[in-house]
Image (cartoon, one colour):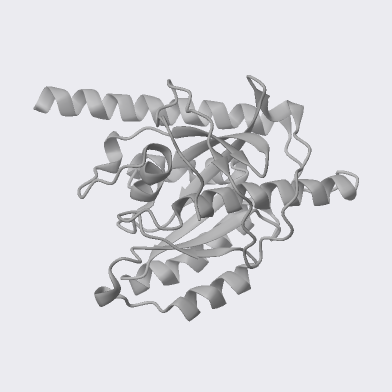
Length: 257
């Protein structure tokens, strides 16, 4: 069950209000516990979690993100006019700032795919329960991340969206669970329209990032996934490029109208 939300805002320019979330244990997510923050990824006193949303077009990636950051659902959404998002939350008693990069529908960003996969700390792979092809492509996204990161140990959550469209379902819950077990990650069936399990998916990913950071710390920081400050710098440059392209799109749309 999601926590109490109030006064949330969606854009990077507006700092979101703090939201409290009670711990929920999920299959494959590991133990819930407070993890030490990394000062190198702290801005304004908050640990920033760099999250990338992946999946085929039309599965509802942007709708899921918008529900999380602004508690709103649009029947029609043009992903080319949206920006990246930030949302502040308190997860298991520890403050976090989720910096979310929605990669939906941007042909211009295909060449940048390796960069945001390399810079992101955690990934949500999304498919639609009404689209079997999107389900099959989820495995391809997982392979692509592993190829770019040169490791299988990646903070990841598998999301099956459009749970509300049961009459059009093409992918069963058991198939989703089986795939998540192969990935070794938490799994959620969500509905952006009804806001079912949206918060749980994002918060579970933060827990995955924290858990793997703790494992690396226990291993003496020897993991190849230890984040170098240069990677953090690339992430902010990447966000700036996304914002510039989106801004040009919005300006062009305004002129055409």
